[in-house]
Length: 180
Image (cartoon, rainbow, N blue to C red; front, side):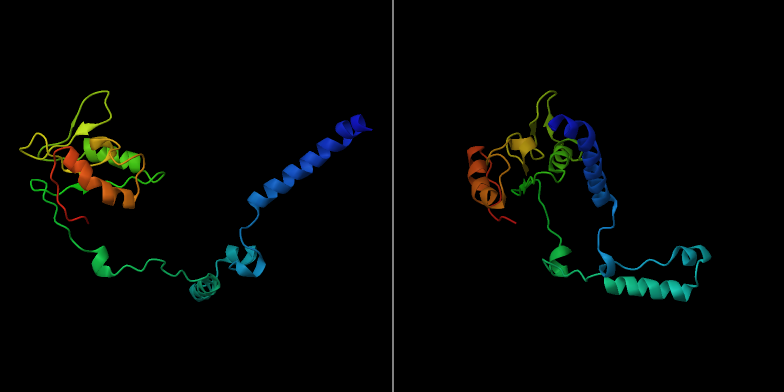
């Protein structure tokens, strides 16, 4: 009985299962009334007038849920200007967030920005020396590619806030005590 099942019944069952899984991925994402309605194929071919299209767009917009801002930032916060004094004591602390392009961006920070005194990168090494203009020890950038993982691997905001001042002092860099 088992041999007959494996030979004649199992392949059609597997094919049916495969088709059901494919149908899930190909079928529309929202069920029936929740989706904005599309005009019938005949109406799409004849084009319809601008008024008809406007009505359809309004109906489609009304059917979609409104998005509510989860973190409503004030316009002043989003558009504020912060002065960064590279020659002074200011330090940029790069918060690396995994899977967001942070490695590429961090690499561009040390290698591709046109500065008065660019970061010095040796071939074959991941860390670069990002010294302030006119200085040879003090750094303006606290990141994986300039200081290494000084506060641990993928340190979050809380860890960086408590760790950066002490790490900068260990490196002999005073840094600005005002954390932003």
